[in-house]
Image (cartoon, rainbow, N blue to C red):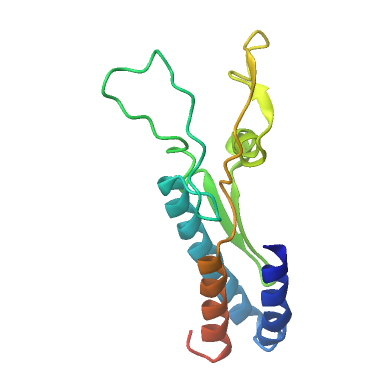
Length: 153
């Protein structure tokens, strides 16, 4: 994954350097928006960047009958899934107040069920990659960069 992004950066950097600062920031803003949309759809589909489904949640006995609970439904809201762009970077990240939950699931770490309660049981959460770059995302980034580099913006 990192190699493919390094390859993309290798040929895209000279193209972006030829753009003025305003055009470069516009390209980065468009990339950040496209990545945010892509991550949002992937989280809604509950898929890892490699296309595999998220590990299923453990069954809960207290759920209301007939109610389907979707993991991370709230995390994909624009309020929590933030994007930013500068002349050199395009970033998609979680807001600070939900980043702890996102990090625990992204990396598959141990945490308390209710982290505010010290008596709450500690469990290991399955690894669910909430943020990641897919092959389609790399192609999309390349298309946006080429569009801006050729003046099609």
